[in-house]
Length: 461
Image 1 (cartoon, rainbow, N blue to C red):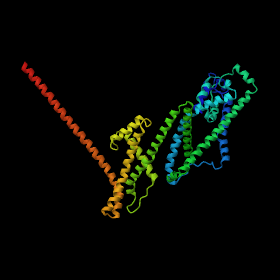
Image 2: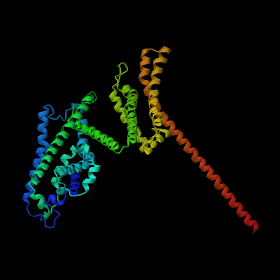
Image 3: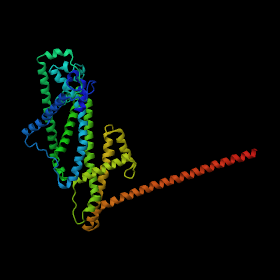
């Protein structure tokens, strides 16, 4: 409502809000008790609370008795800390984040609502009287008119401009249907607020609950159960994504840019494919490798069978992968990557994934990581399960070697880092010594030339 206040004041004429106080007026006295406007403000706020909260809750309860009460804070005892962290992030950043997402979409819809209702009720001359509505009719999407009904009516109550009534309003006041049309406008405003509030109270929750139900196997394993606060945020994001996609397609169809739309769709499909591989397959393989190298040898006894939990491995892989990307792209640490990989990631960062060729992304980035991970996972397994039985070792030895072959590979990584560091250090010392010798020889040559010049001068003298 606050974000749309300036827009409402620009659309409506000053004379429409003559009955509201204007603190910027020279005759305004702050010490004077303005009892009438204060009571009016309280009455309007009370009516809006009933329309926006009470009636939608009652309506939803009548339609679906299982919708309420909301389920918030349903968790296992061992996951209380994780839930507290999630709630803290939602409460701290959620409202501002939602406002930043809603504001760009709601302003043009509010604009269209005011102009449309004024035109239907033939109140444009009284409320607007400005050619601005012509431009608005061309720029605002009529497909999403219903979503702006509540905001326009709510923000218009907070206008802060006052002016004396003009003599030209006499004809409008004498019209017997004028007050009826004003009343119809307020009824439509209240109905709009009720419909929008009911929709946005129920729809995101329903979508979020369905999403939680579809991934219940994943959330229950972490100790989280159904939570309506998270469900509302997730449902809102899904609905906003659908709104953006629909507006994007509608704009391109109206402007007859079908070829550009097809190009964007192909780029979107390509990015979804790359993102799905990057966020699912690569973290899964990386987490499995870390599990084999560190977690299983340190926690599982040799005579016990190891259990692989895929979503734990995937979560570990996601964290390690993003830490590696941050260290590679945003720091000068060179021990965790090669020059070729640093150049690849810097190219993706500078050029952008949409402008890079799909073949290069698949071959040099995605396939390179997957092949390296598969090679590290499969080659030791094949060697242990094919070579050692042929050599005649016992099953206990084969099991021990199979358990500790990946930790042995892990120990080779710091050795490789140390060898690489020593090589760089030796190269640096060699170059430094070479430069010192070269400079010493250059200084000797300069000194010899100076002495030769002095000798020649004495001889001439």
